[in-house]
Amino acid sequence: MLLVFDVGNTNIVMGVYQGERLLRSWRLSTDRNQTADEYGVKILAFLAQACLNPQDFDAAIISSVVPPLMPALERMMRQCFHLDPLVVGPGIKTGLPILYDNPREVGADRIVNAVAGYERYGGPLIIVDFGTATTFCVIDGQGRYLGGVISPGIGISAEALFQRAAKLPRIELVKPKHVLGRNTVASMQSGIIYGYIGLVDGIARRLIDETGGQPRVIATGGMAELVADESATIELVDDSLTLEGLRLIYNRNRG
Image (cartoon, rainbow, N blue to C red; front, side, top):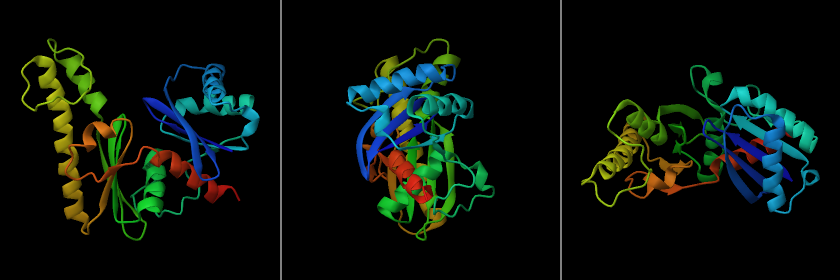
């Protein structure tokens, strides 16, 4: 079996594959201060919950946008699983030409999403990933990564509003029933959620106009469902896109 990790600034998403089938997935908080032992305890507990043992795994792959965490995670993999994980980074085979000015600048998560998106849906394609940052990735009909857009994530924006406006509270990120807010919390929720819907649709339409064609717009990430239902451009939400991309990249490199 294959163990896959997508390490983001806010969450680590872990999945277990048996062949092409995703058996289970979990989400845990990213903590840069945790040690290899602490991560090992948590991850082994998740696996035990699913009646899985460390010896069940013969390979692992990690994509990360948090470089300081990598030593602890790689040490944990060696201690708990006796495996050296494949790490997504420069030099790895993706099968995806990257037309960025400097391909090394493209985050591992964006590359992984693009690989899975093109494999599943073909091109042209726009992938919107709602994480700590909200990212847009554009893949053309030939399977080339053209570039994208990076904007502050929903959570960052809500936290900034709380931190910088003295009289505004920290709020739960849920979609209000109406755009017109009749109290402070509802007004903030409306501004953040419906504001992001406008941001996503506005950027997606501009990308479509600039690149031409009729791309499908696919969403993924922890906040995707919050926006996708009201979006005029998002066609569907694929929660397992990043994990599937990790599986595909592992298979393209295991030889």
